[in-house]
Amino acid sequence: MPVIRACSHCGKQNRVPAKFLASAGRCGFCKSPLPPLAEPLAVDDQLFDEIVQNSPVPVLVDFWAGWCRPCVAAAPEVARTAADMAGKAIVVKVDTEKYPQVAGRFQVSSIPNFVVLYRGLTVMQQPGLVDHNEMESWLKSAPPV
Ligand SMILES: [Zn+2]
Image (tube, rainbow, N blue to C red):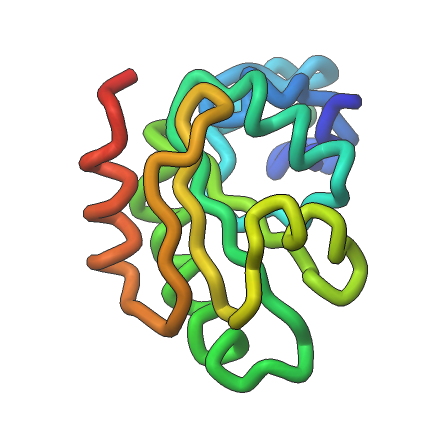
């Protein structure tokens, strides 16, 4: 299941396989550069597995919910992390209301809850609000690509 990404030049929808989300590519229509994913990606349970299992770079997972104020406060930090770590990591967001089964697999009991995975394995997990510097340090200390 590829991720649909719009080309910033021609606006056409490109289908990008999960394993290439952190890579620089080219738009299939106008051949403009399609930069690595630089923003958090909202995923469902299927796409979650696809990315976690195929990503060649570490993946930061933000387990959140709309009613959770600290999650809302964390959102800009998560977005900043995705921008700063573009090409070196992938950041995904799991809505625990919509996809409780994914949260259950990680025994998420309080949110926000952050998990770093590398090659399908959990590197670290920590609940609570933190800033982007801390999130980025988790990703940088994950095993090298
Ligand atoms: Zn294009």
